[in-house]
Image (cartoon, rainbow, N blue to C red; front, side, top):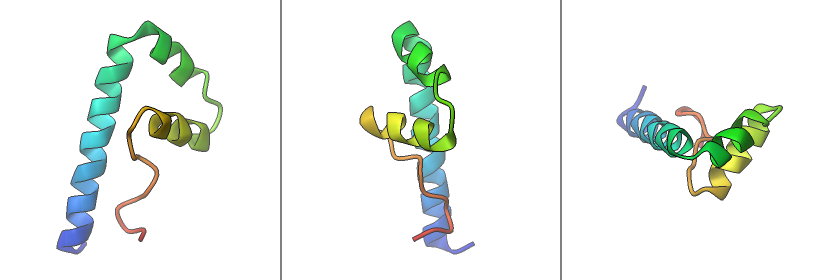
Length: 60
């Protein structure tokens, strides 16, 4: 893992943690989140809320 990949990895963890906090604070967002059927649904919903969780640390 390169330093750049490591930074991307940490960034994604941070984004996921912020997303979890948002979902935990909002019953409406929680309902939307758990209604997602696919990984892409989750990624798109998170993106709509301002979070970037779609790329893996090794992807460009």
